[in-house]
Length: 151
Image (cartoon, rainbow, N blue to C red; front, side, top):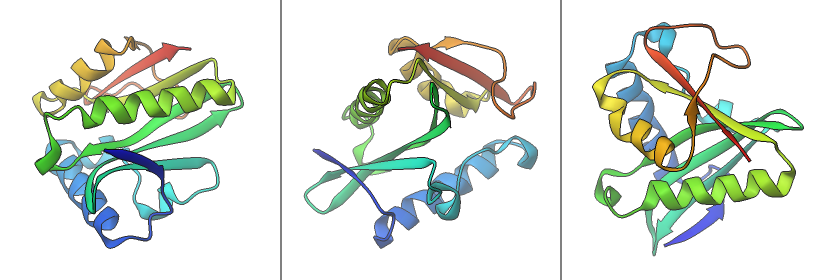
């Protein structure tokens, strides 16, 4: 598996993000969906990485700068074919290493409270994230839970 900085122009990335957004809307109320689409991920404050096996897209992750000391993990998604292979864990470690290089003091994230998101919540806890209050522009929401990791 190789992880690379991505410019979001390859069709496979658009397809994986469309699948991600469709699942977010299928499992969460619309007002609780905070996933970024292609245009949101293209912002100058967002870095995106993709994981590949040969020419197959295995996953995506993004880091949005909230401040010079704080980043937000966005758009973590593993393709169905790659699940159970450690792709999400490898992408997460890669993003966190980059956040450390940037000098961030912490990385935070929002994810769902529904059963669908249980595996994601376990992944974040395994990597040291702890629950926290809403951060940035988020507000308390029964469909969202928030995590942060001090770096």
